[in-house]
Image 1 (cartoon, rainbow over the protein chains, first blue to last red):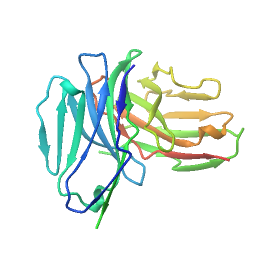
Image 2 (image 1 turned 30 degrees about the horizontal axis):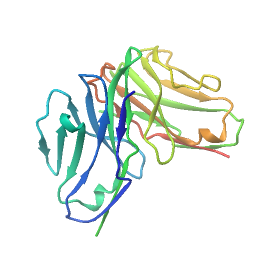
Image 3 (image 1 turned 90 degrees about the vertical axis):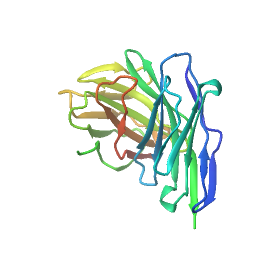
Length: 116
Length: 115
C-alpha cells in the first residue's frame, strides 16, 4: 500500500523567513507522481506543484521550490520569504493507479502559521 | 475558466437523517472524484467516475453512501442515514482524463456536521 508521511504537524515562522515542509512517501510503483496542495482556511485544496518519478531535477517557481530525492523517497517543499498569506495547511500527495483509475494518497498535512 | 463548483457549502443535520451534495466539474473533465476529509486528516477517496461510469468505489461505505453521475457531468453524493462519524468535509475534484499524471482540481467542499 502506498503511504505519505508528513512528520511536521505544525510550523510557525515569522514573515520573511524561509520554511521547508517535509514529505516522505512509500510506493512499489516505478512510475508515480507527487503533488503539493495548499488548503487555506476557506477549505479549498489549491494545486501547487506536480513532479513525476523520472524527473529529479529540482526547480524554483517564484517563492516556491522543491527538492525531490528518490534515494530517500522525499519530496520537500520550500517557501522563500514567507508571507502571512502563506498561512494554510499544506498537503503532500502521491498519485497511484487504482482499480482502473487513479487516486491521490494524501499525508496528514502540515499547518503553517506565518506571523508578523 | 470556471473551477469545480459544489453546493451546499455547509450542512447541519441530525443523525439518521439524509443529506445530498452536488458537484459540477471543470468543463471538459471526464473524471470526477469524491473525497472525504475528516478534521485533522488528509482527504480520502470515496469514489471515482470516468464519464458516467464508476471506476473505483472500493472505499465507499455502500450501506449508507451512494453517488451518481448520470449524464457524465454533474454528480451527487448521498448519505442515508447519516452517522455522527460522517461529520467531515466532502470534497469534489475533477481531472481531464483520470490518469496518474493528471492534476486533480478541487472544489470548495461541503462541510457536514452530524449532531
